[in-house]
Image (cartoon, rainbow, N blue to C red; front, side, top):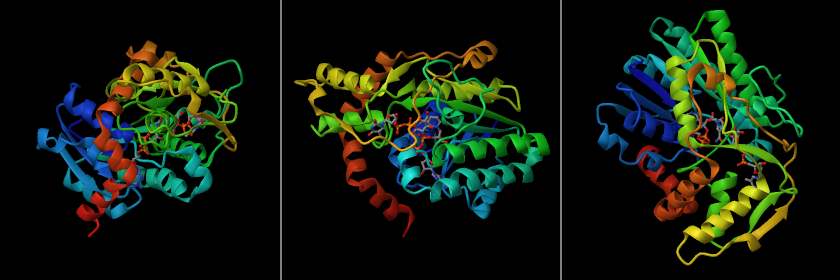
Length: 348
Ligand code: NAD
Ligand code: DAU
């Protein structure tokens, strides 16, 4: 793989992946990052990268749903592998306004697969980044395996499920070399503060209420984002083509315990800080709220030797420290200044 197209590289996981691949992994080729720069795409997430890797990094502002824009990228940069992160990713937004989820997650993925089909002679791999939410919810016991039947609950997870099926269909029908990964909840640097962990950190720093849905007894399986990035790269290099690999943290937590932990760690880490537990506020539950996610990633562990490096405590300490160290990033995201920057640079 010499010229990898990363879609959605200005988002949370995509930007961590690009940083990891260029700066820390054994990859020696070039990355072309195609991102539409929605509210979730922030070029500042990759600050310093273009300067540090002028020959190995290109950014193109482009919509994956636009066939002409994608075709131009495949031609211009001789793309030989795709790592597909671009998506609408937030469950609550998908409940309020599903439209963009259907377009980007389903039609956008279809469009990229068509490109892979058109340039098939040149394509070594299409890696599709997906979610454990396609499996629906677990009860008190059991784990999601790669064989768990799909049963998505939200427009977001239904759209990701559709995209997974399309990727597998293109492998079976057109012999496109694909791999898929279905990962649990990520946290870490550069996560947009609509998701549970960064929202709670930022609200606690501002002494604002910490909204916990329902009774806070829903369970998620948390994974530090760099561990996810390492897993994706391992699968891209060594995963069997046509196969799906689950990725997880072996780290089940009740939401309420995550929020309490953030409050307590902030109290310890922040100079002069105190626990913000008094800010916790139980609010109306999310419709169709999945009760529990827990991943069995033994296939990835046994076949490719990947396991998470961070525990929840070490990962959370790093994450909180990152937000404390980056008040400029926070204020530009919260004020929307990054969106005006994008408008000035690209949309005029
Ligand atoms: P994110 O919302 O932070 O970033 C998404 C990126 O995609 C943004 O940069 C956005 O501008 C870009 N994008 C959106 N629509 C686009 C379009 N039409 N064309 C081009 N770019 C577009 O998302 P994330 O949390 O980094 O998630 C990345 C991927 O990982 C998604 O596919 C998501 O389903 C999957 N995933 C996320 C998690 C998680 O916990 N965040 C867990 C498992 C899987
Ligand atoms: O499991 C992987 C998925 O994890 C990814 O595919 C999604 O892209 C990602 O957004 C995430 O989905 P969740 O819905 O699990 O993440 P979120 O951070 O929105 O919520 C985590 C849990 O916290 C969930 O049970 C809902 C709850 N929650 C969330 C928010 C934003 C709250 O209680 N209060 C909140 O304000």
